[in-house]
Figure: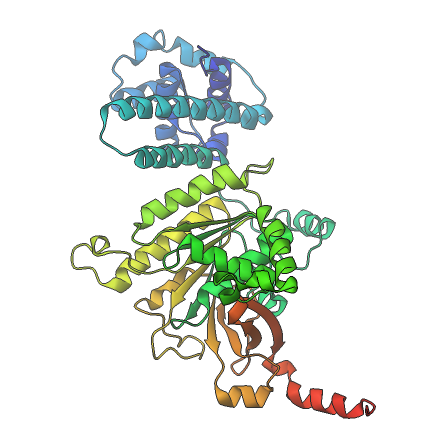
Length: 476
């Protein structure tokens, strides 16, 4: 069996630190004593780390020996030949420039040992425990992901402005309209700060039956069907069969009731539309799972598994472009309430878990929530059902609503029958107090199209249409 160890690399790290104590600060956030395979090296590194906390510029064999014994390593003299092994680390001169290379080698082997040990533990556990297969899979994903993150973590504090010009050049070498993934609504993308960004949660609230799921489905269609970008829909309300019907209607633009009652076969146009939609959907990476009643931990495990199995990673270790749609956040069952916790506290913990997940995995999430009956659209005054604190952890918050009669008359009949307003955003420009984006929504076929911002409509669009119609030549 292969032994994942490299005592030469471990010794090189220790020697460089012994001769250049200040270099310890460059690696202390990346590796620790447990990453060394050799017990002797482990004890020396732990002693050095303890010593440099109080004496960052001073290292010698007697000091290391003293700290080791204070830490309880009474056999330090025996395993280091009365300190001669430590002396040799000071005598050996290795260029400090190679510290990063040797450190990464030590860490890489440590992670491999950890993964092997974890899999062996889980294998034994599978034979002796009552845990379900899903729980065991969840443990594997979680522990391996922790190992991956331990390699990718930051090397420490750095100067904020350092490398700005290089960063600006990288952006210029690969120009793009939006930093994140487009929702298919370019005006909304600009308002929220460049689309759905990696490592962030875009939150959208709406009252019940106000097209939350339809909005998410249209975003999924835009990315997966038109851009071939994987999308995962975690659904707390609708089962797969009904969502498949809605998606098929959205792609084919055939009304849902026509598809559902089977009458589409009597119309040649519908037949061609259904066939075309079927061909597109076969190749489209839209994934769906009903999670009603699932605890948040199970949902997180599903997302981890999907990222690994269906999305995959780039050469730099980050995940490929993808989107997670969570529709919608709510208290799943009474078991989630502990120690007399309020519902808003439970939802706050769920939101924290989702935010931490997308931040650690560097993927975007579109999250839906339900608005209270008295939810209004003034900035910082929008009421989210049971949990205003949801907005604490999102990068942007928008509200989706049906337009009232006055708004439809003022904007014009063709401007749109629904509206979305971005009221809070970390990155983008948001929308003015009186502004909103018009949406033309055809619920019969679950289709959504972008209209203009209210601020762009002057005069109303139906008036413009009438004026243009008056200019057309008369017909017999």
